[in-house]
Image 1 (tube, rainbow, N blue to C red):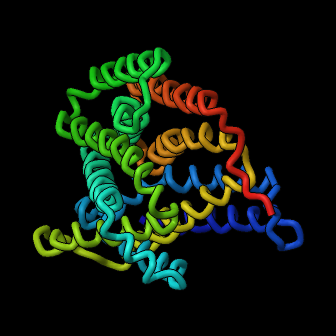
Image 2: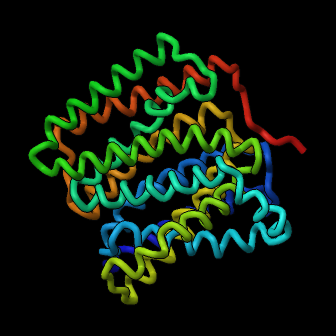
Length: 318
C-alpha cells in the first residue's frame, strides 16, 4: 500500500523536470519540450488511476464520489472569480447529461478493474472513440469508409480479447464495455456542452453533478476509510484529476494537436505497465493482440479526423 509514497516521489521528479523546462521560471507558450513533458506526464498519471482504485479497496461509486469531491474543492478555487456565472450553466441539458455519463463512465470502469485484469478493463474502456464514431451522426457527421474500417478492426479486437477473458469474469467484461460506451457518449455530449462552457468549467460542473448522483451511495454501501485510503483519495482527486487535466490542457498550447491526440493513446500502455509492476498482472496474448488492434484503430481514427478537418494546431498565441 505504501507504494503511493514512491508514486509521489515520481510525480515530484516529473514536476521538477517540468519546472526546468520553463525558461527562467517564466512560461513559454511556444515550448515543444515543455508540451511533451506535460502530455507524457498526464498520460503516466492517468495510467496509474486503476491501480489506485484497487489499492483504495473502496466500492466504485464511493471511490468516484471522493475523487470528484476533491476535484470539486480544488476547481472551486480556480473558477472562483466566475463562480456564479459558471453555476448558472449547470442547468444546461447537455452539461447535465455529460455529468451523468462521466459518473457512470468512472463507476463502470472502477467496478471492472476489480473483476478483470487492469490491462483488459482499460483497453475495453478505449473502445470509446469507436463508440463515438457510431454516434457521430448525432453531430451531423457522416461515417466514411475509414470510420467503418476502424469499427471493424476495433470490434475484431474486442472479440479476440473476449475469447481470452470469458473464463475470467463475464460481468467484468460487460462493465468494461459499458465504460467504453459511456466514454464514447461522453465525447459526443461534451462536444455539445463545449458550445456553452469552456473545458475547465465543464469539468467543474461535471464534478458537481457527479457528487449529487453519487452521494446516496455513501449511505447505501458499506465501506471503511483509514489513513492510507485518505492519502489515495487525495492523490486521485488532486494529482490524477486536476493536475493531469491542467497538464493535458496546457500541453495544447505548446504542441501540435496531432502529437497530443496520438500520445494520449499511451494511457492504456502506462496502465498495463503500472498493473504489471505494482499488481503483478501479466497481460495475456489475447489482450496484447486485441488491445493492439483497439489502440491502433484509435490512433488511425485520430489521424483521419485531424486530416479530414485539416486541424493544424490548437496553439494559443500571445
